[in-house]
Image (tube, helix red, strand yellow):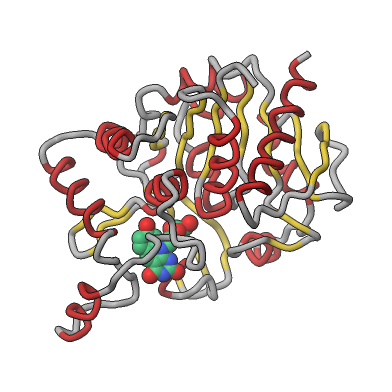
Length: 308
Ligand code: FO1
């Protein structure tokens, strides 16, 4: 597989596809554009969950059981926080703290999120570009039956229980794509959209002015891997959210949501597909590296077919 590929990703499911692509493709031929709408300050520290989950996954440091954070993590910081009556709804592992503290010092010194993220990727010898969607502050908020909630309070503190009415991205209207983002879309032989939650993890990326237009106008095909398997979400609130937004929990609704940026959709085995876009089929469950490579290979082969 030669060529240059770009993947839009967020969350745990997204990181798995990126890992499959990373394993298959030659060094430095992949760019990941990562959701940063989940980012927030906690204890004054800048947390970038989707960036960190991707860095951990690609460097084989991630906690497979939890889906986030590090393997073999220790929690003495959190025990000390609890002993002092500090807030403990969002867990910061002892090793994980290093990312947040070094990122905090860097941002405080005027470095951009994309610059410090690139430093982390090279420190862990990752041979791909990991680009935040923007270096500006954009925050995902959820309008719910429990009021307006910032993303992590909805996702972690409330465990996605609130009924969602709408999702918005504070700051998106004036945010600029991070350096290299538009170019990575324009110059790609194909752009892949990982099986992330379209509303919570991909829409923040599409909300940054210029990114959706670049996807509509890019030469390479844009192919999404559906986050639904047999009408359910593999992990996280995608199906529940679709129901709450009044949508059918279907691949057709996924294709419809992405609209005119999408050229192809990869669906799970013989799940009902969509007649809005070209469809390819594979087992999209990614339980291990072999699965991840299978789904990545299916996406790359589909891209080649659509590019002709
Ligand atoms: N998710 C949880 O469900 N509980 C946590 O305590 C938690 C802590 C955490 C710390 C760092 C980090 O990078 C991610 C963390 N996550 C936690 C996951 C995070 O909320 C999600 O991965 C994304 O925001 C959505 O994909």
